[in-house]
Each structure stands twice: as structure tokens, then as C-alpha cells.
Length: 224
Image 1 (cartoon, rainbow, N blue to C red):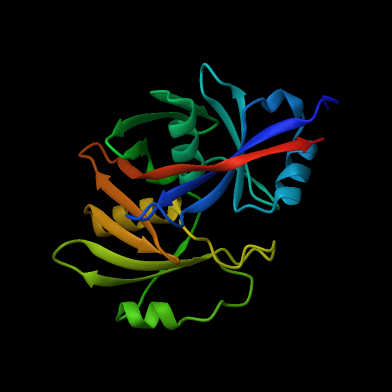
Image 2 (cartoon, rainbow, N blue to C red):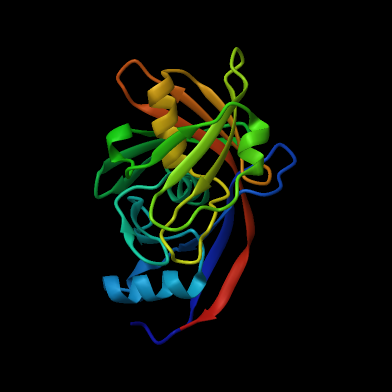
């Protein structure tokens, strides 16, 4: 490990219309400072964010993603956040190339649903039922959702990772939104967590675009 302290950008991904909320993401721009999986996993656990992404090549956009307890081949909010921060049109993950674009205040990525980790998508009768849910016991990754306005494609959602790693509820989850958009076969406008917003748009080739606002929350320094 490099002895020079690392600087870590902290982003909020999938912010709401008021630019608030969003899911916190740590971005290690110089991934070489943490060259092995054990060091990366230790840092992700230390930071305690839903995900931390390591940039192994900033010019090619090579990314490596970790939760506090495991490595992920793909996750939505780390890739959207990295696309915004690095301003690249293509990002490289172990699952394949991810294309990105910027449209006004939104950053979009194009992903295959097969890349998303398994999620239990559980529908409820109303947004009020989703709002009233208590955090379930660990063991199952649950994406709870209900229609707010089915004709308009508006959805209320909450996400419970159930991993027992300190993340009881995920504020905004791109992979789950990707799977839900595939299941429903339509574009969605998702209000998740305390005030985050995610947009999806299926394409004829089976891929799905995921979009949202990204904001810089700050920079952590002095991380060994």
C-alpha cells in the first residue's frame, strides 16, 4: 500500500429535484494506492458507505466496486457517480463496457440487466405501505416498491440490502431500478429513500439506461 495518504472524493448519487439526498459514494481516483482486494475491502468497510469505487485507470475508466463486506461486479450508483466525476463516455468493469452520457443535470449509463446482482422485487399496494415498512431482518436483499402514478411511470421505492454490514437501508439503488424497469418493460421515475430520484429508460436491444443527478459532497484526506 502506498504510504502517502489518499484523497477520496465523496459523491451523492441520484439526488432529488432539490439536489438533496442521494446515495453516498466514495471514489478512490488512484486505485493503485490500494493494490489488492483485501486492502480495498478494508477501506470500504472503514468508510462504511453503501459502495466505494476504485478507479484503476482514470483514462480508460477501469472501475472496481466494493460494499463494506463484498466486491460487486456491477452496481448502478457507483458507475453513475464515476461517470459524472471522470467525465468519460465509456467505463470498464469486469462485466463489460458501460456507456455513459450527460443530458443537462442528469448523468446516464447503459447497462444489461444480467449484470445486476439478484434482488427480491416486492410490490406493495400503495406508496404509504412502502413508507410504513420497518427494516427487515438480515438475509434477503429486498426492493420494496409501489406505484405512485402507474400511467406516468412514477414509483415509490425503498431498498433493504439485508447483508448485515451496517447498511440497513440503501438510499438509492441503480441495479434494483434496472431490474424493475426490465420486469415492467417501461421507463420509470423512481422516488426512493428519503428523497432520491432515479430515472430508467429501456432500449430495444434489451439494455436499460439509468440516470440521475450527482453532486460532490466533499473530499476525505489523510486516509492511510
